[in-house]
Length: 197
Image (cartoon, rainbow, N blue to C red; front, side, top):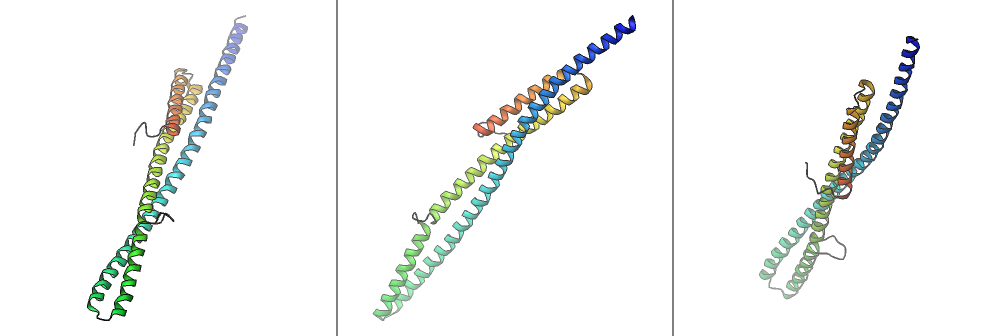
């Protein structure tokens, strides 16, 4: 009779352990789901940060090229103005004045060209905006990375619960899951609220 009793106890314990393992598997599945979300959002933020960084670099290079062109034209106009003073012929002076005026207008257009958005002032504003988008995306990325780490550690702790039977590890994993959800939400809605890096 004691063998039958031991067998019954063992099957009850096995049934309880199987039910417990199903609950742990469900926690693992939920953590993996949130891990997938944070990884996807993180990759998107990383790509956005890289794109914005390239855009800012391109705009600052364009700004620099416009500055060089503007400086060259202004210098040429100043030199031509000196040449004009030294030239006695009124027809040549008029041609030089027209050339100086054209160069000055072009230099002014290089500095400020609101119609096309390609003046130095507009380029500087666009580059600054691209830098801001880069910084924001990078902050989001860091929060998503922390969230991903929390979810991954939670999954490992749940797996350790199955092996060791130490249930408190599952509660610790659940706590890390909540931390991960919090960092995902911060990255999504308020990335500048918490500064970690």
